[in-house]
Image (cartoon, rainbow, N blue to C red; front, side, top):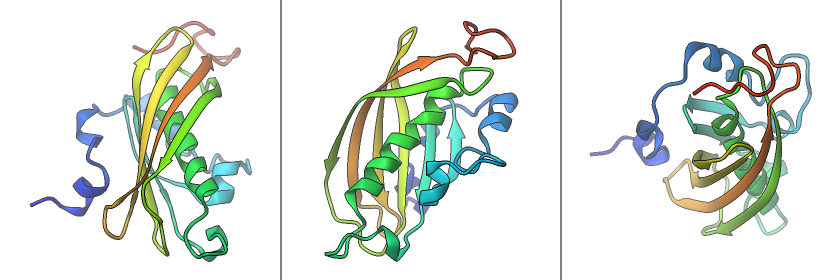
Length: 169
């Protein structure tokens, strides 16, 4: 029998835990102290961080609905674009510069009056290009709401403590 965590996060166990310094750096993702950024505006919450993996929750609220009732696809796409960021960035000693190069979203099912839970993971890393995937599920029943594939361009932060070209391994 699977529990709710397994249903909403089937990929988490495939990824080892983050090193303590990376966990400390990324634990405030979505609500960086002293900053009002887009993930905070949408209400995203970090649920789990691992090497090459992240799980975020988008709590339901009526303001996210489109006129027909389901949660707006733009909020779901934003969740997909955001959930992969810590999965990509954890290897750097400071938060790197990241740009979405491509993103495709496949909507599978309507999300109605329920939280969304997204998993994002890295599928391939190059020197400056990272390939990722994401999956969004309805928190109430585990149904897949959307899938995404993304390609990111990554540059280490110029003021990183270990210099701009020294990511963790």
